[in-house]
Picture (cartoon, rainbow, N blue to C red):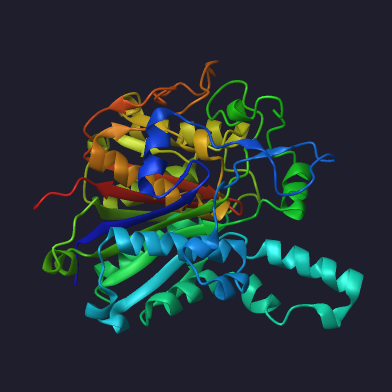
Length: 414
């Protein structure tokens, strides 16, 4: 079986807006969600900025008692899933729940719960640790809670491949639907790791921007003055289903998923291959899987983290794959606005890519003001571009050498 697979619902909890409309408006207007960290004291940290989700109240989406038994990363996921299911106009009572599942990505899971309960253990002893500690903290619980919320009894998995997690999840969901093992899947990713311990860890690695005086300008992918990534949080959830299932219920379609590629650098725990060959091969596999020529790709939503090595080596990967066509394809990093959502990045970036296709607008890379000679592609600097997008790639690259790329297509009857 080789089903066509489409995206029919979108749910977003992000630093630049809650809900697809606010998220998209911020993206195309080039608005940054990065600011000084408000959730804990950062006076002793070298990095004092992040892209936090503002104005999020889980009780707007989840029963108050249930919300208290969920880590923030799960609250994000369940809330975004409800937005996506509503957006898809999916009637849960009318679908076969045995063929309705969840495949989610998260790089870190419930680290906020972990840290708080560790503090309680140290200060008050083991008997004061919450009985909900384990089911709140473990990395698969967001997918489990989504399934419970919607009575989704089909395939249920959580992918953990660091910052590639959500793109792997979307790609895996595509393959499950394509081969006919489910009719409808909730997929994407979630992360809530702006915590004292996580910030300290990334700071010690010297991976984060320290542009604390100008937080809105701190994430500057492909710019010569980039000095590290900015942590973000949130959830990007898609409802994906077979075209046959979507057609039968008269669903609106954002885009079609047609290709998926996944590789590993097998090289270093944090640094990508210098020749970009792992990322190149992931894109190449996605294009091959989609049965198109690389000349047909109009847009790439890059991993684009605003770190020296990632931006340089991803640029090399694109140039090595597209060769003379490299300067024709538009490339942008929406992390310049959202920050880096780590394991959830691929979810909101798949959404950004689908909306770019649907609306014929390519979101910009903001803060790109000082050209880096080593990064010389068309990164859609600072201003969105109106352009029909027929095929687009979304890339995610993760610590451990994980590379994932999905290929989306503008939906047509053919």
